[in-house]
Image 1 (cartoon, one colour):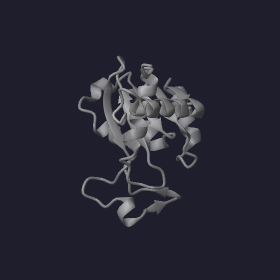
Image 2 (image 1 turned 90 degrees about the vertical axis):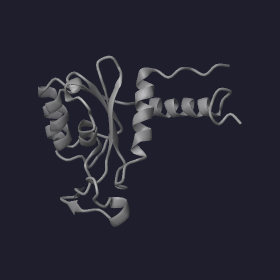
Image 3 (image 1 turned 45 degrees about the horizontal axis):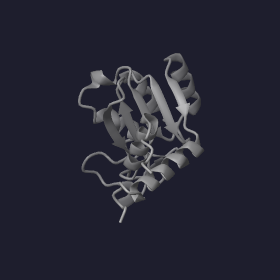
Image 4 (image 1 turned 120 degrees about the vertical axis):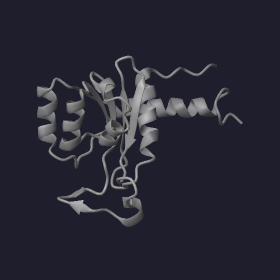
Length: 169
């Protein structure tokens, strides 16, 4: 039996989750992928320290007001990694967790109009403001259903273990 092809949403979710494996703050490994209006991947970012600086996983966290400030969040890194910021206008983002106020401001400022959150980060800074900001800026926010995520990952495992998958043998 041929495997079921992943939908665009499943594809985006999988890439975002796999990208979070690169994160370097073990309080919450997060990532963000940004997709243009045609569904093409524009950029990927995960949480990590500024270039050349030690990571939380190496030296521990730097906590201020119950938030680790040693890392740049995945949302900001995805924006920083974008080659052409003009392509972000009207784009969509898939985010592990929910954005903090700083990241939400950045996403709105570059023109992100749709956000899909994979899970909720309970410690996200100023979550009430983030909800207000997204409403005022007409940013559509969707929260992934955990069962859909589990089904997507199950399908992926079946695929890589199946007759046309990389681990078939």
